[in-house]
Length: 155
Image 1 (cartoon, rainbow, N blue to C red):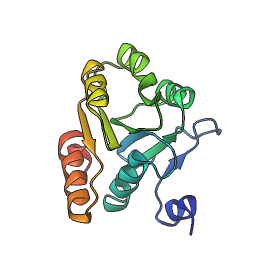
Image 2 (cartoon, rainbow, N blue to C red):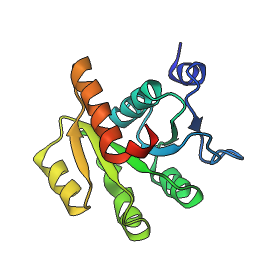
Image 3 (spheres, one colour):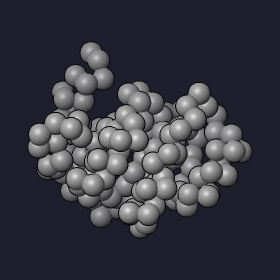
């Protein structure tokens, strides 16, 4: 079963930002995921949606343009941004995001975050920058932390 089928079968709302009606949500909390499919942010958001089924909707933005479009079409409770070493422009959305939505919480999730990545996260006033856990128990603890910090009223 591929990623999209898995999401549909679990009733996880995944919207394509450019499709008609994609910005209509049925869940109390909306999360914008800016990452590639199966990237660290996508995996984290997928797990959150599975553990809190029916309470979290997520919109996948694969690039800067989709992210800006989604932010201008809907309200989000949290942005989860995935960054990886071989992708140098993931934080490109941050200047616009901080100018237009200064109070929107942003969490960066990465694999092998460098000191440079962490410095850029501080520069853009990102709320959290975390290394993607490798163990299931640590991943579940991260999900609980995200829910407690950013989506507590939705759980």
